[in-house]
Length: 157
Image 1 (cartoon, rainbow, N blue to C red):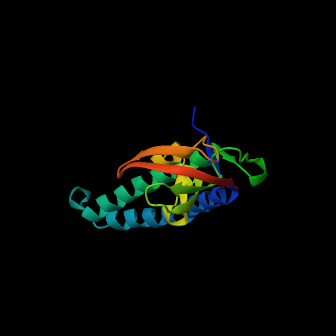
Image 2 (image 1 turned 30 degrees about the vertical axis):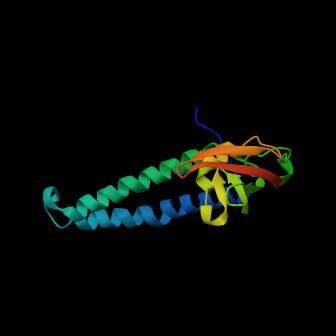
Image 3 (image 1 turned 90 degrees about the vertical axis):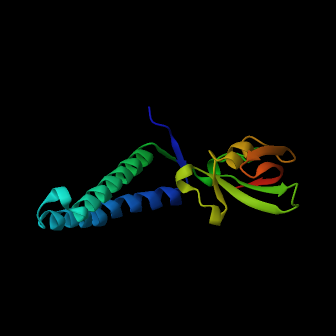
Protein backbone atom coordinates (compact mmCIF):
# COMPACT_ATOMS: atom_id res chain seq x y z
CA UNK A 1 0.00 0.00 0.00
CA UNK A 2 1.30 3.44 -0.89
CA UNK A 3 2.12 5.96 1.81
CA UNK A 4 -0.28 8.86 2.38
CA UNK A 5 1.00 12.27 1.38
CA UNK A 6 -0.31 15.13 3.50
CA UNK A 7 -0.47 18.30 1.43
CA UNK A 8 -1.72 21.83 1.71
CA UNK A 9 -4.38 22.81 -0.85
CA UNK A 10 -1.73 25.04 -2.51
CA UNK A 11 0.82 22.22 -2.59
CA UNK A 12 -1.72 19.85 -4.14
CA UNK A 13 -2.58 22.37 -6.87
CA UNK A 14 1.10 23.04 -7.59
CA UNK A 15 1.82 19.32 -8.07
CA UNK A 16 -1.31 18.89 -10.18
CA UNK A 17 -0.24 21.76 -12.46
CA UNK A 18 3.28 20.35 -12.75
CA UNK A 19 1.89 16.95 -13.75
CA UNK A 20 -0.38 18.52 -16.37
CA UNK A 21 2.55 20.54 -17.77
CA UNK A 22 4.76 17.45 -18.00
CA UNK A 23 2.06 15.48 -19.80
CA UNK A 24 0.88 18.17 -22.22
CA UNK A 25 4.06 20.16 -22.92
CA UNK A 26 7.19 18.25 -22.00
CA UNK A 27 6.12 14.77 -23.17
CA UNK A 28 5.38 15.95 -26.74
CA UNK A 29 8.68 17.91 -26.83
CA UNK A 30 10.67 14.80 -25.94
CA UNK A 31 8.72 12.66 -28.41
CA UNK A 32 9.61 15.20 -31.11
CA UNK A 33 13.29 15.19 -30.10
CA UNK A 34 13.36 11.37 -30.28
CA UNK A 35 11.73 11.42 -33.71
CA UNK A 36 14.22 13.98 -35.02
CA UNK A 37 17.19 12.04 -33.63
CA UNK A 38 15.84 8.78 -35.11
CA UNK A 39 15.64 10.40 -38.54
CA UNK A 40 19.39 11.08 -38.45
CA UNK A 41 20.24 7.46 -39.11
CA UNK A 42 22.26 4.84 -37.21
CA UNK A 43 20.86 4.68 -33.66
CA UNK A 44 23.83 2.71 -32.29
CA UNK A 45 26.11 5.75 -32.55
CA UNK A 46 23.56 8.51 -32.15
CA UNK A 47 24.28 10.43 -28.91
CA UNK A 48 21.36 12.78 -29.57
CA UNK A 49 18.97 9.82 -29.66
CA UNK A 50 20.45 8.36 -26.45
CA UNK A 51 20.12 11.71 -24.66
CA UNK A 52 16.50 12.09 -25.77
CA UNK A 53 15.67 8.56 -24.60
CA UNK A 54 17.33 9.27 -21.22
CA UNK A 55 15.33 12.49 -20.90
CA UNK A 56 12.17 10.54 -21.74
CA UNK A 57 12.93 8.02 -19.01
CA UNK A 58 13.45 10.73 -16.40
CA UNK A 59 10.27 12.52 -17.49
CA UNK A 60 8.18 9.35 -17.29
CA UNK A 61 9.59 8.62 -13.82
CA UNK A 62 8.61 12.10 -12.61
CA UNK A 63 5.12 11.73 -14.13
CA UNK A 64 4.76 8.37 -12.38
CA UNK A 65 5.98 9.79 -9.04
CA UNK A 66 3.59 12.77 -9.23
CA UNK A 67 0.69 10.51 -10.18
CA UNK A 68 1.35 8.34 -7.09
CA UNK A 69 1.70 11.36 -4.79
CA UNK A 70 -1.56 12.88 -6.02
CA UNK A 71 -3.39 9.55 -5.86
CA UNK A 72 -2.41 9.12 -2.22
CA UNK A 73 -2.74 12.77 -1.21
CA UNK A 74 -4.72 13.87 1.78
CA UNK A 75 -5.36 17.58 1.68
CA UNK A 76 -5.22 19.20 5.10
CA UNK A 77 -6.89 22.49 5.85
CA UNK A 78 -5.95 24.86 8.65
CA UNK A 79 -9.22 24.27 10.52
CA UNK A 80 -8.34 20.56 10.84
CA UNK A 81 -5.04 21.16 12.60
CA UNK A 82 -4.40 20.76 16.30
CA UNK A 83 -1.76 23.15 17.58
CA UNK A 84 -1.24 21.55 20.98
CA UNK A 85 1.89 19.90 19.58
CA UNK A 86 4.06 20.11 16.47
CA UNK A 87 2.38 18.26 13.60
CA UNK A 88 2.53 18.27 9.84
CA UNK A 89 1.48 21.65 8.35
CA UNK A 90 1.85 23.52 11.64
CA UNK A 91 4.23 26.45 11.94
CA UNK A 92 6.65 26.21 14.83
CA UNK A 93 8.73 29.04 16.25
CA UNK A 94 11.91 27.65 17.75
CA UNK A 95 14.90 29.07 19.56
CA UNK A 96 18.27 27.63 18.59
CA UNK A 97 19.85 27.38 22.04
CA UNK A 98 23.40 27.46 20.67
CA UNK A 99 23.07 30.56 18.48
CA UNK A 100 20.23 32.31 20.32
CA UNK A 101 18.38 32.82 17.02
CA UNK A 102 14.64 32.37 16.63
CA UNK A 103 13.24 30.91 13.44
CA UNK A 104 9.80 29.83 12.25
CA UNK A 105 9.41 26.65 10.20
CA UNK A 106 6.37 25.06 8.65
CA UNK A 107 6.46 21.28 8.62
CA UNK A 108 5.32 19.87 5.29
CA UNK A 109 5.54 16.68 3.25
CA UNK A 110 8.77 15.96 1.39
CA UNK A 111 7.15 16.98 -1.92
CA UNK A 112 6.40 20.49 -0.58
CA UNK A 113 9.68 21.11 1.26
CA UNK A 114 11.32 24.43 0.38
CA UNK A 115 14.03 25.56 2.77
CA UNK A 116 14.20 29.06 1.25
CA UNK A 117 10.59 29.57 2.34
CA UNK A 118 11.18 27.89 5.73
CA UNK A 119 9.15 24.81 4.78
CA UNK A 120 10.90 21.71 6.07
CA UNK A 121 10.02 18.10 5.46
CA UNK A 122 8.61 16.07 8.33
CA UNK A 123 10.98 13.31 7.22
CA UNK A 124 14.10 15.52 7.55
CA UNK A 125 16.18 15.23 10.73
CA UNK A 126 14.91 18.61 12.01
CA UNK A 127 11.31 17.86 11.03
CA UNK A 128 11.38 14.44 12.70
CA UNK A 129 12.95 15.93 15.81
CA UNK A 130 10.28 18.62 16.14
CA UNK A 131 7.24 16.37 15.54
CA UNK A 132 5.19 15.74 18.65
CA UNK A 133 6.91 18.40 20.76
CA UNK A 134 4.87 20.91 22.78
CA UNK A 135 5.51 24.55 23.66
CA UNK A 136 8.27 24.78 26.25
CA UNK A 137 9.87 21.45 25.33
CA UNK A 138 13.35 21.14 23.88
CA UNK A 139 14.09 19.04 20.81
CA UNK A 140 17.63 17.65 20.66
CA UNK A 141 18.32 16.94 16.99
CA UNK A 142 21.31 15.23 15.43
CA UNK A 143 22.20 17.02 12.20
CA UNK A 144 25.16 16.69 9.81
CA UNK A 145 26.61 19.81 11.51
CA UNK A 146 26.32 18.21 14.95
CA UNK A 147 23.73 18.14 17.69
CA UNK A 148 21.34 21.11 17.83
CA UNK A 149 18.88 22.01 20.59
CA UNK A 150 15.68 23.81 19.68
CA UNK A 151 13.29 25.13 22.31
CA UNK A 152 9.69 25.19 21.10
CA UNK A 153 8.41 28.74 21.61
CA UNK A 154 5.13 28.75 19.69
CA UNK A 155 2.98 26.47 17.53
CA UNK A 156 0.50 27.99 15.09
CA UNK A 157 -1.28 27.38 11.82
